[in-house]
Image (cartoon, rainbow, N blue to C red; front, side, top):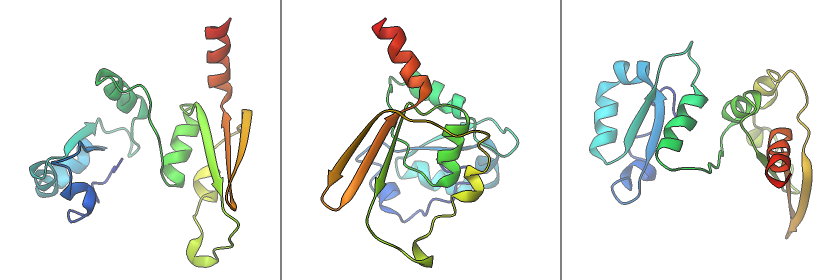
Length: 156
């Protein structure tokens, strides 16, 4: 996901796109304003999927519909605070996994998560929580309310 088409053209993802499929989800506006960047990306073998302009925000339902048409039924979203908040706000996350390391990273390691997360209007509860210790790290995983209801329907 790269709404503004800011991916560095010399990054490994672009350089290896000819060997492994790469799909970059961006806005139609970015394609219009960065035609040379778009051309360079596709020349290197990556595919661009442009979503319709919707007030500067990506249309996640459009993305998921397009991925579904391609036979993709599972998606790992590993993003920054804005991307993660978008999926949570739209109630599109079935499982949430958080890794915790016993380190205090100081100012250089902080992620500005408070701003985007403030857009959420209510707390998100996790169900069927699983906690694993991976060396000194901890993995916490839980299902969203939506996923729990969908499982109940399938099992019932």
